[in-house]
Amino acid sequence: MKKVSLVIAAATCMAVLSMTAHAEFLKPEEARHYRHHGMEFIGDNFKRMGHMVKGEQPYEKEAFIKYASLLKTLAPLPFEAFYKGTEGGDAKDEVFTDPEGFNKAKDKMLVAVDKLATEAQSGDMKKIKIAFGGVGQSCKACHDNYRKDD
Ligand code: HEC
Image (cartoon, protein in one colour):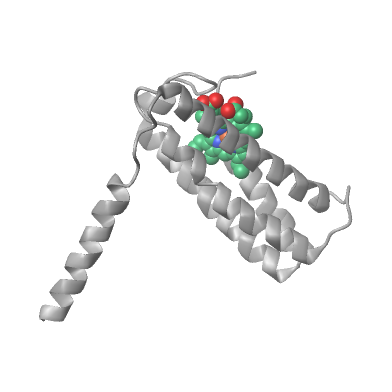
């Protein structure tokens, strides 16, 4: 019994820590800079995966696995830099007035990215294509609602 409650206490503690782990950037422009470059890095990485998926470049399984795992690492990064007080950049106001919807869109993307990393291991281009398309849709779905048009 004691052990169980200790485990629960530890788990609760970690959950609280992970919720509060995000520290704010010193200045709003530093947060905007961080998320902008994070998104660009995600975009560039996704693009080079696209070159292999579309056959514009020879498909190399090991390289593709590396890109997919990198994408998984990069994908969550920009999101610690979207919070009230950092409005602006290419982010629509809806990011800050509808954090729940924004978070849902983020979670959908993270699930899709996870799936792509799994399919990359299979080396099966048919499956990879579907998963790649799923990620692309998840980016677009969020951009349509939460990113300003260029
Ligand atoms: C949950 C919402 C969301 C998801 C999912 C998302 N983005 Fe973004 N993205 C944004 C927002 C908001 C901006 C504008 C950020 C800013 O400038 O403050 C942005 C900006 C960008 C930019 C331009 C850089 C910039 O800051 O304007 C690129 C490139 C980009 N995203 C690529 C991607 C790719 C590729 C994916 C999918 C793998 C993706 N994004 C998924 C919300 C999202």
